[in-house]
Image (cartoon, rainbow, N blue to C red; front, top):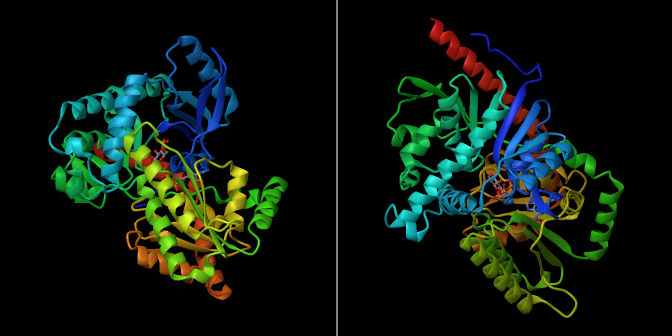
Length: 484
Ligand code: ADP
Ligand code: G6P
């Protein structure tokens, strides 16, 4: 029948995500400095505009005292256009829930890396205590949602940190409109079924009315029938559909006109005059394939000595989740490889790799995206990868080449314009680098045009509008069904 469309009215939206768009750093008892958080979730959600939004999340800091908590809540509320409401998690919960269950167990599992060795043997005590902390943290998020919820609100839960939240919310208020969206890949059922808490986690998500994806795990692990509508579990239908995320492309395109961005561009062009510049921008995460990328660049230099002083790789890798041992190991591994290659191919005046362990501010980032010749995205697995979208958005005048991993979600959308590579195949990536550096202008233009069209028409706002509209429709349809 006819589809209902709710896009016209200004819907109140409670976004719930582990991460707030700003993270806090303490300066004294009641004074806080707020810094932008880094990551695709924040980038996508910041691009969502046409709702009356509250954003509930963790400010990335332990605040044990009440004075500090009140001051931080106020600072957040004053500073941001989208109002932010902090969830306070104590140090032990953060350790077990965020460092442990989320980033040491779910993250590597969902990206096909598997479970960490010590948890692979059995459901050890540490696994169980981390799962308990995970559930406890999800309950704390639910408490804050309940405090701020008003009838008619759409509650949109995000990512692998909050898979238990739909259940917590629905148990307290079955009428609440609850959606859940996963920003990471959802692994095949053969991978997911390794997880000791596999059933409980899936069932909790299915308490939501609308879910981002993962039909196959529901059908294979829970043994449920998948239908075009979604899945039905114990008489309750959960609608499941795919909603590809995007960026606020206009924000990037407009930024390129700003004088400070133009200044950065000028400086960068002078600094690298006479050389082609390849760019990597990633959180320093094992799923980004940074060592593989750098080794492929080394192979390219090895095979093409004539390029040695004519190309530079800028790798901007912001440290992330630094309390998790796997991430610490990765940092030293990357530093070692970069040092070795620069020692091998550098000269007195230039080195082939500039590696920075830091984040760039928005203006610097836009300038870099705009002046570089090739972007190198070599994720071993990635939900979407918004860096690839940002690069394309900033390349209207230069028409640079995107080398993109076939294991990033973006390969589905930007595959026709990008050079797709298997990041594990160092030989293939090395030859793609050569192909990209030598690509004639007309081919670059054609490829870029294809991707640019996609990036500007599949925005973050469109993503959110579709999800929320679909959630509202799902609820109305469910009401109609029960009345029949
Ligand atoms: P992920 O969510 O896994 O980090 P995405 O590519 O989807 O991957 O999103 C990363 C976001 O974080 C992008 O918006 C990108 O601009 C930002 N980002 C990543 N690394 C840096 C960095 N070194 N400096 C500034 N921003 C960064
Ligand atoms: C990915 C995850 C997000 C997360 C981001 C940054 O994009 O999907 O949920 O916010 O990485 O990671 P962090 O652990 O710093 O929040």
